[in-house]
Image (cartoon, rainbow, N blue to C red; front, top):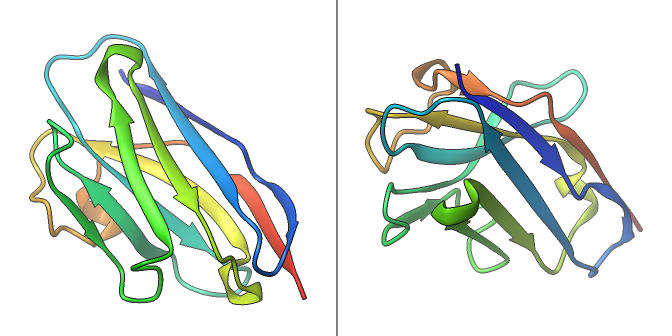
Length: 125
């Protein structure tokens, strides 16, 4: 199966930036749509961004649009989330997810087959 490992989380001040990485390993049987979700303590997991198999199409939650950028490097089996202008409300555990068949606008966590364990992002004010 595909294994996903996130990295790059940490503590930053409001207005700062972080770049998260999600590295995929294991056997793959095709290209994957890859997405980022986040979950704050006591809250439901929410969609952040998704990128198509080729990287040519992206879709963002309204809450992060214009501040976050998702990208991928298929040669490295890695997806990135560049986060700029961070706000305290961005504080959450960020997880990457992957699936072979979901559409580019799929925002439901249950639609994704593979998940990483997450990386903590904390934004101080």
